[in-house]
Image (cartoon, rainbow, N blue to C red; front, side, top):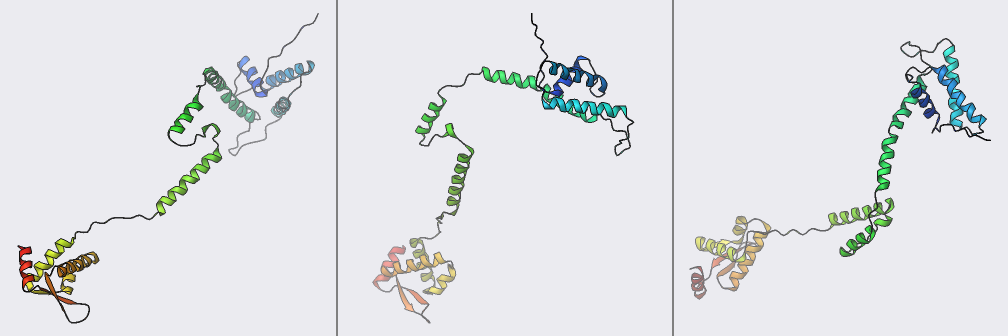
Length: 256
């Protein structure tokens, strides 16, 4: 006849200590170190009798409890900066409180895990993404996406952005001049003054584009015999006069 003894399983020494504290409804901030140490050592001895391999962290915790128990028997000489006696159980209590905080989150995480496992993965997602990629003419690589590939794509995007920024930009500026309008303006100036120097026209339209349009207008008027040209003082200036004779009559008809 044989019988089997089963010990409750604990994930670690702190799990076992919390079991003793909750079972006996002890105050975790004021642990009866003698009682806890005896129960902890008793559990380890049962494991030894059953030839169960004892983990090193259980042995370390047992040694820590025995050290705290010995310190509790001695006069307390250690004091903090404010002169208060240091409780030898303080460090153990802090570790237990931290362990209890994380352990309390275990049921919530376990429930989330069960809920996630109960969900069915969506089918044909790779095929659908491949169809979308083909329709939009880009390569589908989500199935083997990695941080390295993401960084390579980012590098390419930044390179293209720099190229776009450095690419020459052509700006079209519309100037308020036409050859026909400047021809009428010059003819009006000539009629009012009987003659006018090219330098005077430049003074009226000093910008570069204005000078170009005025010069082209003068050439056009010369071709049409609407004006005459007299060389003035210096090679950089000339006098514009009204056309004479039959050309003058043509000019009058054009103006009217």
